[in-house]
Structures are given as structure tokens and as C-alpha cells.
Image (tube, rainbow over all chains, first blue to last red; front, side, top):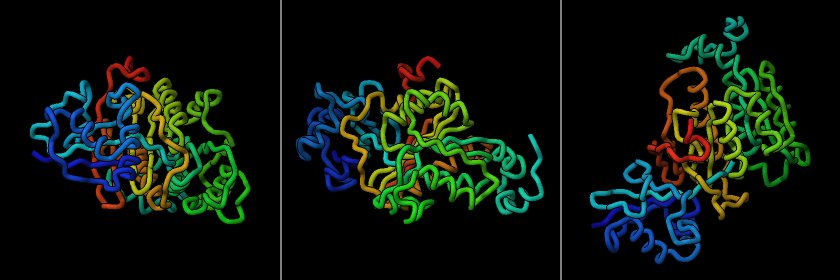
Length: 93
Length: 247
């Protein structure tokens, strides 16, 4: 199964693209997917999406098919998901 | 609410024709005060469009002088303003553009010492600061005082606009509970992208002030000008938010 990842803000700059298709990784949960993406895109990317303990950063917005995901985001089952949007905070003014 | 004057009717004639706006909407705008922080690539077009629409009063908060590298996005300032305070330059431009709008230039950035007083002056707050510390401080103060806030942000070719109505919608701290450690004040920007984020924010603000259209609460308007993709994303309040969770 593949889904579309949309990168925004600094993540898009680091990934060099605002969108890519990726296979659902590992156990099919969001955390496994983000782990895989961090491995693919390197340390700077990982620094933006994870906190110091390696968990999804509290200020990383995760939007799935247009809706923000809250609660236990890491465990989100990606079955049937078409698009995951990862949004790091931006404050350009 | 005071009726419009003949001059008001003459100046705003074309927008009085907007269905759902009319004289009542114009009078609400004229009787409203907006705080804009700061006077940058987003704050400038914000203030400009609010003045064009006939907001009653603008409070512009910004410390610091105009530099050459600001000019690609500072549409209210000119080359001969370089080295002069940005807030004062913007005030002068706005005064010439629409002399019926009262403009107060505050040559300070939002911080703990002034946030409460500056937010108290306004009916609505527009966040356009380049640092999260300022945006989150305004958000906290708006929630505390029950004032609506529109946050317009951009980076590179992307913009995001979030409207906050305390007690009704997710606030900025719901979305960003911790300061993002990697955000830097220096960011890539084309002026038109900043102005686009600003003007989406202005429309959201006008709607909140006047009741025009549909309010965009618990949503984020997101655009990527690179792909010209616009999305209206659904947001969620955080019931445990340290700023608005108890409201």
C-alpha cells in the first residue's frame, strides 16, 4: 500500500519536495512511517519531527486526509489513508 | 452604532454592495480597533488592506528600523525610509492612503511587559511576528481577554492562516504546545506570498468583526504557492491545552 506524504515548511526544504508517494512501512502505524522517512531524509529532518526522546514532536502537526490527528498519533493505523501531511510550525511574518 | 457618513458611503460604495456586508458591516469595521504585530512582510499588507476596508483604528507594534533587505516585502515603506522606524514609516503611509483611519505606532515588539495592554486596546489581534514567542504570547493574552485573533504565517512559498476565538476554537497553543526549537527568524520569502497570507488573514478578520460569510474556526487555511494548492484543514482543540483548555 502506498500513500502520499505532503511536506510543508522546513520539512519540504529538507526533503527537496513538497510531496512524494511512499509505501506504508513496518507495522502500518504512523510512527513507523515517520521513522522510515527520517531515515530517508537524514538528521535535519529527524530533528524537526522528533523530540529529544525520539517521540513525534508535540508541535508537529499531523494532518491525515485533511483532518488534524490528535491523541496517540504514533499509533495511528494508516490502513485506508490516502494522504499524510506533516507540518512543522512556521512563523514567517 | 453610529450611522455611516456621506463620506463613508462615497469611499466604501463598492464594498457596501457586497451581500451580507452593507452599511452595518462597514459601521462595525469603522468602530473596530485592530492590533497588528509586527510591521513586516505580512503585517504591512495586513494593515494596508484593513485600512483600505475602513477599519476604525490600527495599533501597529514593531521595534526596529527598516533595512535594505526588508524592501522586497515592505509594501508600505520606501527606499528613503531605510534606517527609520518601521512602525512610524507604516503609519505615515497609511495616513496618506486613508486619513480616516486612526493609526497608533508603537515602537515595541510584543513581550510580557506590554502584551496585556496592547491586546486590551484592540477588538481583534492579527499575529504576524517572526518569532513564536510573540505569537504565542499574543495568543495567550487573547485567550485571557476573550479577544479573537487571526494568525497569518508564511515560509518560503507557503502560508497558513488560523483564526482563534477563545472558548470556541483551537488556539495556537493547542497546535503548538512547545516552542519549535529549529525555527529561525531568518526565512525565505517572496513578498507576494507574505501578502497573500496577510490578505487571507484580513478576510478572516473582517468576517469575525462583521459577521460576513462563514467563520473558519477549528480550521487552517493552508496554501502552497509553488503548486498553487489551497487547502482548508480541520483542526482540533486540545482539551488539555495549558492556555485555553479550561475555557
